[in-house]
Every structure is written in C-alpha cells, then in structure tokens.
Length: 253
Image 1 (tube, rainbow, N blue to C red):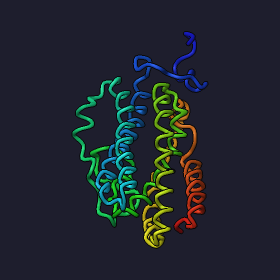
Image 2 (image 1 turned 30 degrees about the vertical axis):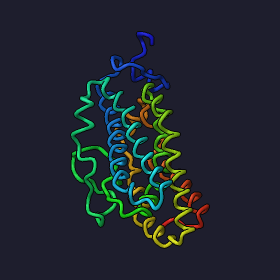
Image 3 (image 1 turned 60 degrees about the vertical axis):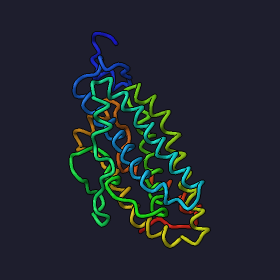
C-alpha cells in the first residue's frame, strides 16, 4: 500500500486486509459485529437442534440432526478463533451465553429477546417438533446460504477464507432439510409442513435487514457489504420457491 493511499481508499478499490494489526478501529468494530452475529447464530442454531435430536423419527434422521449440531458448533469455532485474534475472550464467550433461550412461540416476527447475544432474530423462536425443525432448517438454511455468499466477499481475508470452508457445510444442511421434508411429505405430513412453513417463512424473511443508509454506505466502502437486503431477500425467496416447487409445496402468502 503506497503512502498516498490510506486504508479507506485501499478498501474502496477492492483491497483486502489480512492482519488485526492493520485494521482501523471503526472497521474493526463493524467486523466484530459481523463475526459475532455469525458465531452467535451458529451456536444458538446448534442449541436449538440439539433439543430435537431425539424427536427424529428414525436413526438416519437423528444422525443428521446430531451432525448439524456438531457442524454448526465447529463453524462457530472457526470464526470465534478469528475473534480471539482481536482480543475476544473466546472461552467465556462460548460458555456464558444462554444459547437455548427462546421467546414465546407466538411472538411477532423480527422480535429479539434482549442484548444477551447477537443471534439473528429468527433464532429467538422455539422449534415445535420434528417436522417444524426440518421446515425451519430448510427456510433458514437457504437464507444462510445467501448470507454466506455475501460474507465470502468480505474484505477481511481471514474471514473470507473461513466462510469458504463454512459455506458448503451450511449448504448441505439445507439439502438435508429438503430431503427430510420430502420424506415427511411421503409419510403424509404435508399439512404439518405447510403450517410450519407459514410460521417460519416470515420470521426468516425478517433477518434480511439493511443498516441505516449512512452505515450501509460505509460498510460498502470498506468491502464489508456488497448487496442490499432487498437483493439478498429476493435471492432467498427464489431459492426457497424452487425448493418448495420440487417438494410440491407453495411458499406462504
């Protein structure tokens, strides 16, 4: 980087940062928010699925759920390690949050519990049985795929590299969910799946929110965001509609 080009100019031109020592304070704060949201969401998601493992109707389903719990926790660990390089107390962070806590089931979409953690709002709602968990996993799994596509372009290179490892794992979780829903539908559970879809679709949609305009412009300039929430939500809606069509279902109105 030349003396004439400051870090903001460097990032605006598509530059990448590779070391915590080179990260400006405001960039660091935004980067930590992004990483904390991912870590908290993975740990909260894993905690939710851990509670339904034994509700799986067969050994294959229980193995799949247990594997999702393991892999989401491992994904969180990858990013938590990067947070540790910025000084985060990773042991306390992972072990002293109420990851299993949820809001009442009938709470409005987009609600958050408190400032306990930075999980995506959809992960504040409880699962209600196996069909509900699999339906949520499809809706949210496709949303995570869209979000990780965006995060894989982030200007902090170590995070982008971690996302490239995490993304295929999360994409496979969505594939497992689609396979699980196909089995449930074959077993006569289409009505239960449709009811769960009506519950989860608006709650997943609510995770696609833009920052305030001035903050959004700053994030784009720093290479921490590229697409708008509207673009990402549209991408997710298309992926969900395609998956539901394959299952013979329709998206909730």
